[in-house]
Image (cartoon, rainbow, N blue to C red; front, side, top):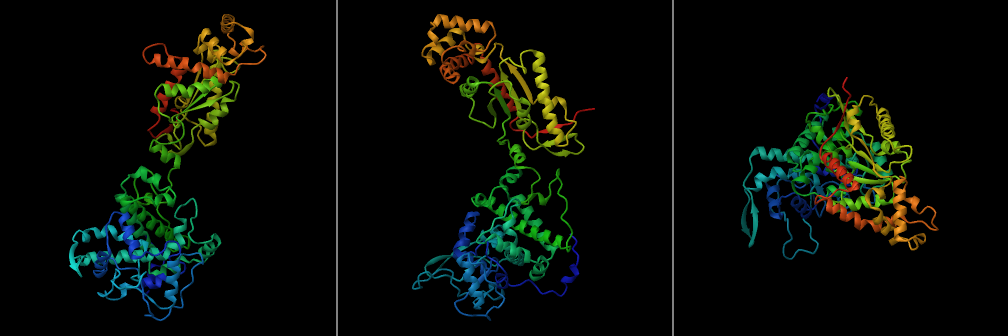
Amino acid sequence: MDERGASEAEGRRGPPSSAEIASLPWVFSQVAPLTTSDFIREAQRRGLALDDSILRELWRHRLLVPFVRVHSRRVAPPSRTVISLPTECGTRASELRRDLKLGRVTDPDTSDFNRRHKFTPQPGMRPGWWNGLFYSTYQLLALPQLRVNLAKRRLRIRDRRPVSWLPKPDAAQVQQATDLRQLAQTLTALEARYLPVIDPEWIHLRNLYPQEWRDYREGFDPVAMGQELAVTAETAYDRAQRLLIDAHHADPVGTRWSLLMRRAPEASLNQLEGVALLAFDYRTAAEILLRFYEDLVERGVATPLPEVPRMAWHPLQERLSYRQDTLDQNLMDLGISPHPRVILAVEGEAEADHAPRVWRALGYPPAPELVRVLKLGGVTRDLEKVAAVAVAPLVGDRMEGQGAWWLIKPPTRLMVAVDPEGPYFGTLEKIAATRKKILDEIRSVLRAQGVTTAASAELDELVELRTWSESCYEFEHFTDVELAEGIMAVHETIDGLSKSDLTQLLGETRRLRKDIKGVWSRWEYKVSKTKLAEALWPILETKVEQAQKGAPEPAISAVIRSAYGVAQRWRYHPFVLREQDD
């Protein structure tokens, strides 16, 4: 990419040493430097077995040089440029700052390898001995390139102990290691400014108060930092692209799972291991570089990043901050969206109590993301508003040239199974009018999203209305004798009626196409429909089981089976909303 003022780099000094980088404001304030044992542990998490002796060999061959070395005495003039860290920062970072001020810190890459340097404690050394070496967490990015060298590892006996030995690497491997070390230096310098905003949706600060970081961020000059690090905008972008390409090839979970995983908070991502964790490392490093680049764009010294294509792969799609789709879309693409595929709206207590039981009796798994039961509490409830909130499609981007829109969440069908009464139902004309009102409300929600030409056939799929053939749910599913026995089980007096009288009263109420509540409307105290539903369940359960062997199927069972079939059909596919053909 082009960069204004690139010619100004001529005559600029080379990159600073890692000791100079360690003295920059707030370096290591977010992620502490790693000791040798820390680095070995983190390498193990990424699938690479290291030990002290192999780290020594990697340093000897300049394939992995420690970031800084802390000496027990002054080895350089005391640094006057070191800025103290905030008081909340960790012990290691604070002590490193102190040692920098005392002139005890050097860059191991600026001197020859010291063969006498001890990596491990020797007999007679004091307790708590430390080898004085720190690594940057970004040096873990070099691990994949070291596999070729580590495959040539041999064991030798030294002081009666086995130690690792490596043959001399070729010049290309050493140059690659040098480039990766410079990348780690750049990332370490930029980390404090950009790591807290890796997640585009929130700021994650470590060891800092928000106002402290805001003050630091406002005083941060990306142009000056680029000059200090001898890193141009073009270099930052090229390295970020390479890291994102590596992440794409390394990520073992595939694109769809990766898009979902990138939304997880850091605490969850830190539970990754192996190659998946390395892919996250690549993306983190790339995001830091790209945030730095975007700051340079705002300062007018770099051109804007290219637009990311939707229908073709591009390295920028691998960014941690890339959010082409919503979380709902990512979940939908994987078939694990929590949004129900069917909302089954039933009217009263008995239906709401029996529907989940019928679901289980049919052998269906507990899956609220498939079918969710909604108790209406009466058919006069505003079904249009239910449809507007729960069923109306949420539309994403338009598919250019395809005559369709991407959906943000999977489609949901509203299935209504209620008594045939009131102003909403009863006759075919009333049912058709009710259905039209619901669909009109859905179209109104779509218009608010800028969609005015959605295909009617597709919207029709979103609403299904059913009524019982009898006047109420209880009469639809139980005989008069079954209902009489159920009422007698939950009502102590049944208003002084005999079982025969109660059965006859139920039959008369059924013939008059009245609701079952009319049976006890004049009784001293009423029958609890919830308790009645509980008492009637064993009868309905038997009917459901017999239906699976060929007996007539209860209507509620047919509704549940239909809802389950629709939910499964709509479960694992991405969806679009198509435009009405002319």
